[in-house]
Length: 224
Image 1 (spheres, rainbow, N blue to C red):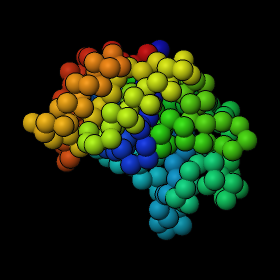
Image 2 (cartoon, rainbow, N blue to C red):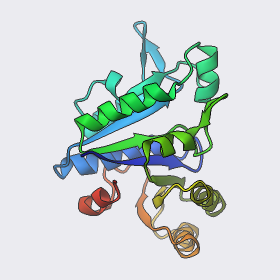
Image 3 (cartoon, helix red, strand yellow):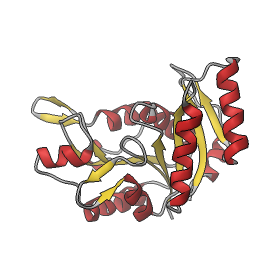
């Protein structure tokens, strides 16, 4: 039976895709049958008349996934805006039934599935129906939160954790991105977040890293 985890973030530019690629790569290099899925992707580039889902393509190439791109993303939008607006502008709004069908299909291909969200946990997916949190709950997954390591992350990360908890979404951990080892403020951010929330900082990722410093067996245990 496939196990999954949902990657969300404190905001749009926290580096979810970069971190997600490293997580999937870590599992695959350790011998786990690990894959990737994303419900909706905005800002895709058009090449030779086709929309290329850049986030999925990056994860696929970085982690060495052989699954076709069309099986990794359900909705691909060219307009670089929130999925709810992109779906309206392009006449193809997200349907929950389609997302769940494709998610289950992806689960059938992989033992460990990493699901990447769009933006932060309150990103609107469809104006008249649901937010990102609704997809998380419909999939029955816990989350890992990607957060920038620098100034402001205490506020943003705690707000994200507390919001998830209020919505009965389990938080398995935090990954600090763009971390600078030895930086007094960023080291303190890590310690403060763990002490205040009780949520572990699973890893700290530096810019340009090609690996994430976490034991693959420990990482696999986060999936449910």
